[in-house]
Amino acid sequence: MSKLVAILIGFIFVAVPEYAAYARSSPITAELARVCRNAAIAAHPTPRPGTKAQGIKEAQREYFQACVANGPK
Image 1 (cartoon, rainbow, N blue to C red):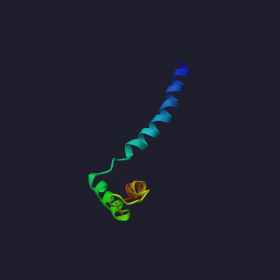
Image 2 (image 1 turned 180 degrees about the horizontal axis):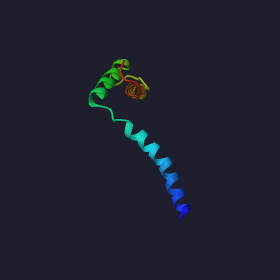
Image 3 (image 1 turned 45 degrees about the horizontal axis):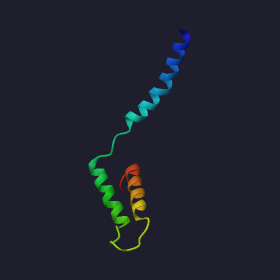
Image 4 (image 1 turned 60 degrees about the vertical axis):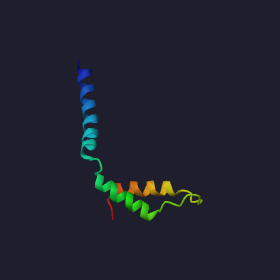
């Protein structure tokens, strides 16, 4: 019985802090997503069809993720 109690206590010490960190993080709002999307497109404009601009999608995605993580500037 004491092994079971020790396992449960160990699980609680591991799971509770992880859940608390998850519960504190809130999803992004639509307004933040809109602002960051517009900023990403302004910083890395989408090229016209037929041009050979590579890496724009990745640059926009990275800019958007950084904007969401740090807040718009």
